[in-house]
Length: 344
Image (cartoon, rainbow, N blue to C red; front, side, top):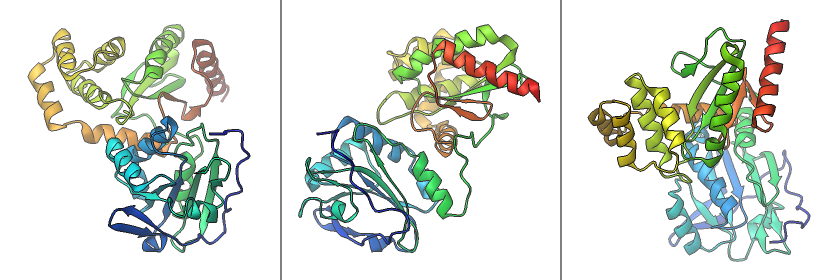
């Protein structure tokens, strides 16, 4: 793919969305007009099986309840064939349709200004269409960059009359969270993390170090955001941490999971329960019965509403930290927040 090709000019907000009918399966077709009366999210993406496309659609699948909260229908569109879509969808366990803009190739993408002529693929383009069929928001991302979901959710919030808070933590730290440090600390650091995520593994000792340096000046909150379609053991690891928490050892399990990040098979998780002196059978039953699935989904939902697209994502006193998270950078941001708090 020629990533240097100049992006096309996609249809802007305020434009009536062109209707279309595309195949969603061997015997099924989907029209945009089928969804008149509800918001629609069109996700044009370059190609099935590319890593960035896989991560993008997996994220949208993960936070599908957030789209459903707005009664929005999401439709994926690329120039891949039906059979490619079928295999890709099954492999990613997608719960929304992928439409084949295959023949004539890219016809619908062209109508939306989202076709890369030189490459013969669609742009990585997003559209939010309102109940009346008008485009309310459109965006083109660089082909190599996952645009995430925060722009979509903000546009859906606007369509529904809600006000989206850019970069704000929607659900503040509360009594349902596991925390370290005093509630009266001048700065609260919230992390949305995934126990199997390599970047979260890198961030783990960084958080430990800033806690050591700041002491009682920082309160740390950890929330689960397992990217299950990328990390197959992340969900069960999160459930085991929650189960350990109910036995009074959340943080001990939290630390052990990150220290053993490459060893997260179910049997190994149960061995960690033994190692910490926990009731192994209770934890096994919790995994089997998905006891903590709803709680974890609540945390995922709160993250996606706050613009979390990947892990780790940090919030400092309710504001998303969009800079690096090495010790020096994170510590500087935390100290700045402390200074602001103390100046009030």
